[in-house]
Image (spheres, rainbow, N blue to C red):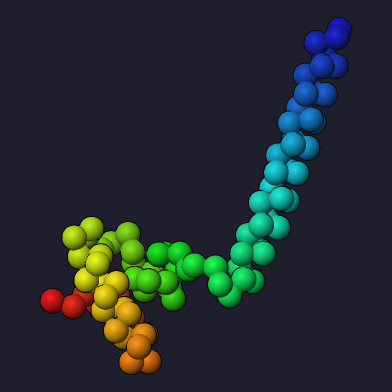
Length: 84
C-alpha cells in the first residue's frame, strides 16, 4: 500500500524539480538574450559565420572569420561566403 502512494509522490516531486529547472534556465536565456555584450552563437544569422558555422570546414573557419571581420570593418554584413 505504501508503494502505491510513494510512486505518485515521487512522480510529482520529479515533475516539480523539472519545472523549477526549466524556469531557471528560461530566466538565464532571457537575460543573455537581452545582453548586448553576450557573444552570438555560430548558428545565429548575425553570428560569426552568418548562421552556417557548422558547415564551414575547420581549416577554412579562420579564413571565414577573417573575411567576416574585414566585412564588418567595411560596414558590410557577412553572408556565409568563404574568401579564397
